[in-house]
Length: 368
Image (cartoon, rainbow, N blue to C red; front, side):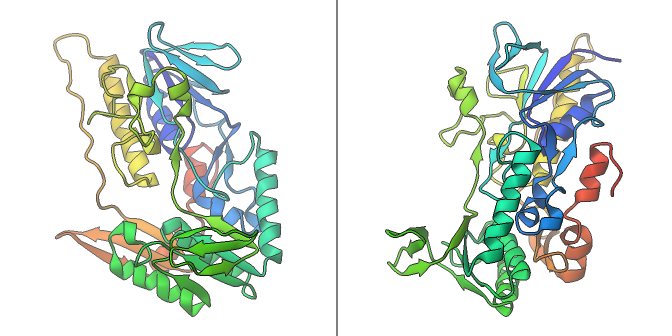
């Protein structure tokens, strides 16, 4: 049974999950600028190792059985006419529209260009630069920075690798001091120089970097893993700047509706529902929003259901790989504590495959 037109803007983790959940219950159109799904979780390794170059790209063609995937750039949401307007002039009618445009990540965890070939070329350029670099600087000691530093170290055991972090401990955003100590111990045991309380900025000369104390580091290659930017400029340009927070995130209520809108939802990294921008949170939001959208589309009559309310993730399992055969897993346990697990669990759950078989199955492909 199809009941209502749902346009999902953005084909990342949250958008794909939600579109698939609604495929049998509504007329779903997924719109994305990319021709394929970009498995960002595997992108850091793809930016370092040639054999992983094609791994992050999974076609959309098997995702939906009843709905459609449209490759295009969204210009604006016309709330008066209830249409999503694309750059080529296409106007997609909606009963519900979902904003799932995610966030922009620093390279190499970014889909560079507009086609798979352009993105793979960008990976190849990073791989080549890493292969010939004498000193690589990674700025940012969160999960992405730690993972990238480990990947570079394992690919280039002969190069000098430095990880600079502005905070007093690695992985401080996770709230687990033990996990941060474990990450630091692994990096230092593999000859990665870890610099804490070291806020970095580009120096005066090319290839130089200066910390807050005035110390200068010279490196011929650098990567900045210091945060993300929500992909919402198009909303501001399209006349919906009032939907956004000062940081550019879509303001949502607890049902994940855009503030003040009954038929506009926002899920994943693009909204302000939680500061913890990780894939499990995006998937949980997609599941809850899908339920609320079904409820909204079938809300007539006496048996109207109330929407479910989202509870932000404050503690969730998190795995930080140290290459393909090691890592640290943070597992919340009752009482507010966090269990920290090591190599075997981290390798089996994520580090070896980077969840690629799981995501291929989600897109309708075999695990291989």
